[in-house]
Length: 269
Image (cartoon, rainbow, N blue to C red):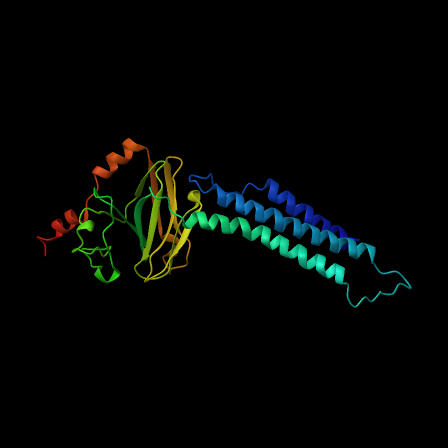
């Protein structure tokens, strides 16, 4: 009986902890409530299976407990039971995978009117690049990175001359404006993650990955690296500030372009 009670308490306690736990998601600040919904569906499906299995084991322990003279009944196979278990498992897995596949398609399908921003990770800081007045990011390459050109912008590409360079500072975004985030790493694996945006993606050296989102409330949100990237990994943090239109315009006017930065270092060279 003790084992049965322990199993029942585990099942009931797990459900109570899930419903009453103070540790929950941070308040969302983007359009990706779909990701929260997908996680909730997964929690409930796996939670139901977990509770059902635990309670079934408790029932079996109680129902088939030892009694003098009782012998086990041997049944080599049960086709109906096997089909029920296999079919139920397949339906459960499909119910968890289907919402994720739908959300993934949305996650990588960027709206045509989305803006652009490039996030460049390196041990152990974040750098950012935004399009200039032409609305286009210029080409960049890791092989072009120097002390004076930390993001490797290609100087011969006219589209990059007015790009706004933010090295080690905060990234500002416009409230309600969808943005495609290009992700590039200069050294090792990193992962750009803002918990309130619910969106994250690995940054792979030699590749450019991406995702998109729409900021839905103003505020300052912490950037984390969600991929172990060396001894300075815990300190690889930054900030994304979501502004209203006026604040964003004022911030943008204070930033330097690539050509301005190059002009500033030219006399020293």
